[in-house]
Image 1: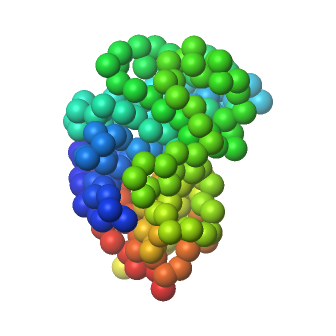
Image 2 (image 1 turned 180 degrees about the vertical axis):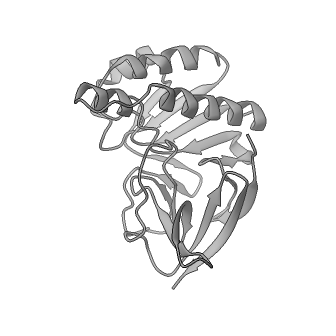
Length: 219
């Protein structure tokens, strides 16, 4: 797995964006991601659509690689960790967290995280909250559209950009979206679509693919 990095300043924080759908906050030794959607493939299988469990396995192995690479102390998931209740793929996360007994896993709840806090604790989640403030950074799942002097980091939108290639074909890339007081995270799960319309403007997007990360300006 290739990990490409892009440093950005946001409020008083210096973040490292990666092409692997997460950012690293070095000052806090914290990996930040959103929209893991554990159990989504199992939910589809339950409803007659055959999708492999390997989708979740691959997402978790990518997460493990990032944890080792950055030597993180805390993993912060900014909402939609679980897609639709408990199933066998969600149980994988208990085994995953057990591999990192010295790490703290924190969840800022999203609209899909409709599950008891006691169950999340059993999975190994150290703390569950609706929002989290660290220094001048406000973590909340759904972009609020207002800032009240804070710098907000959110998920939910699964942002992406569509770019016209020389062949005239339009290709879509997941991205981070950075505006004056808002940073929107890409979906960490690869089995998600991308929304190219519901983004703030003007903004600077950091789009990425497996081997790189690049800027796209939205006006």
